[in-house]
Length: 321
Image (cartoon, rainbow, N blue to C red; front, side, top):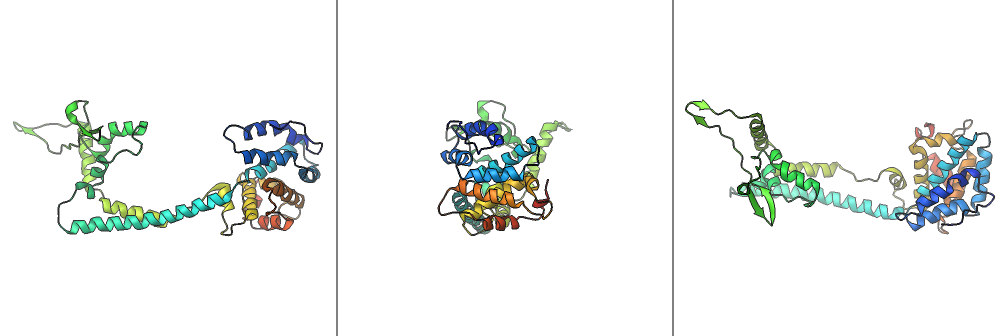
């Protein structure tokens, strides 16, 4: 960690939390770029002007409110620093895959229905969701969920419960599964109907429900509809950064920065009560912090860049408290 010998221009509000924040940023899970970004926001000489601007802007505030404001700005400047291009690529991949899922689900549903029209007897799993569940391997076979499903899956499918005996087990690929035996008829003995207990009645009801449930093609139709109606998107600061199709490092950073200020209504702390909008001094400080955080000769921020990003904020965000 860099020596905690602060330049004279770093305000006490920043010094008070710098060591703790830097320890967090330089932990084993942290990225090197993240720690370097925060170090620049504290020690980079370009920040001297930003701290001076903020000192004048928040001069009338008490110590607690001034420290809160500076903490919010520094944290947002640091957290908005990310390589958003990789998120954009992943979002495009998700969008393409979602379209493939919709198309494939529709094709598979159509093929199963066409097979049914041949009148050739096919697997029950082509029609019954419950039968398909019975032969489906768990996606995480060594997990607690897999163990729960092995014990409770028969209840979901309306099967006879497994009593622990070896006769009620079958071996499939070296794993244990429950034999799907559904008892649906009532025995009559000497004119007396055998009473079924509540668990058996419930099991019968579940079995009846599955027999009346939508079939596998209908399930695939629903999956296709869900995929067609779904539009993949990123949320939070990443979503704000990718809100424009234009792949601009400066725009993405500023949108993420301002989102982090508005997320908890903090942007109202920096509002110009007389003219409305963001204080001019704060806009200038944001421009400097953006240059320091991004630190790229290919992305030099201007006051106009910040003003344009502020003007594009939804109106309700600027009024939050």
